[in-house]
Length: 541
Picture 1 (cartoon, rainbow, N blue to C red):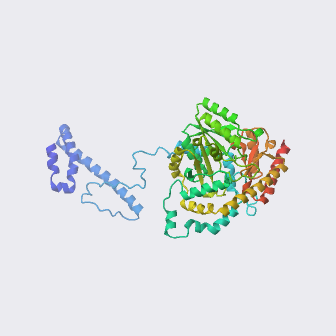
Picture 2 (picture 1 turned 120 degrees about the horizontal axis):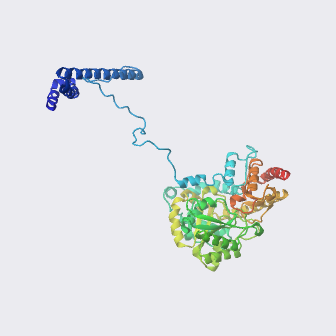
Picture 3 (picture 1 turned 60 degrees about the vertical axis):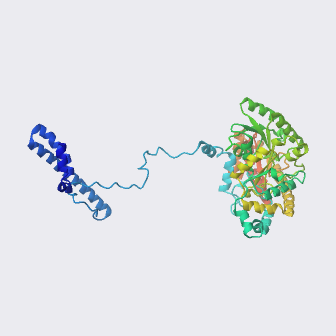
């Protein structure tokens, strides 16, 4: 049967009609029938089957052609071969507009992000600190355009001396950036520059820091690493001083942003060290020692202390005696000290500011364990310029920080502009003097306004805020009672303040008021709104 099939299929006239293909189906069937029922049935049955198969396929093909003509609005113009009357053509495989149908595996669900990203999105998103900032953004107060909006008292931003900055920029910005114009100055701002900052800018920054501290201490430009704000400066020090799972001791109440700046990307933990109102929230070495021992029992390795001087949110200054005690404690425990001095030039009280750098220069002790963070966001009212820096005595830290600065470098035009501003000695001296006078004036007026409402504030000599005791207005002496009052201040009085619980304060009822975002004529408006809530709370109690 195999020889017969091959000889029949090789004839050219049958090949032209498609008969060869048909006979390959019929002949095997014929052989089967012949073996059982004779020659006649062996010929008739396969032919009948072939006929009905042709009829069925032709009818289905015609139905498909009719559908194509209806969809295309005209007859199908596809050409067919001469054998189309005997065997049907296979329809072309339809093209898909999506690669999903061609994928070997169907999608199992939406694409996911990392657990770290989820943790950042969810962690702290609904904290009172962030909720308040969001409400101000959605409904900002404006004396004329939106007098019923939310007044910003939760952001440590100094707008009191922006007019001085604006005057200087109007007169000098173009010349400062382009430095007289020409090819050389363009290459100085449009090409790659050192990622840890221009040396000219480091020299200017070192001089500015010295002027802020009234020439008591000098700073070495070679020990400075420039970063895009104080936030990455603190984060970089976290990377350099501690491994993931290690911890820093941080006296409370502290700036709410530390929970983000220190922890998010480094994997480093913060151990809050409680300070109390009885001591005006000053640092206690006894409390530090207790927290260190407890951390050790929990299996946490403490790598350093982070302090703010002036403190945020209280505004008190660290005395020389306290700084020496911190150095002794750090030496005893063999840990680092990170001194956040970003508000060094924003003091406004009778006490003098003492930098950790001054203590180190005097005694020449343990230089390698001391690291200072500074910037221009507060003391020069330039938070939008994103300029911060690390000042360290540790060469290993400096070497690592310079490499990590590639992820947070300052733009060359910003550096060129600020080099000219900082070397303008007349402007710098005027700004420091006038800014301190304005801060002092606003602080006194704001504290006096709160005192008239029966609200006392902790003693402050620096910063942009009042740390106010409103525990007399809370429904219960607890975090819950504090947050209920915060909610009323935000939604009824429509003022955004920071509750003490956001700063990890262990005593309920304390709130941070940032007065430097206001003008003098805004103070009565704020006091009137606070009084409204105060009367409501007193009437209910």
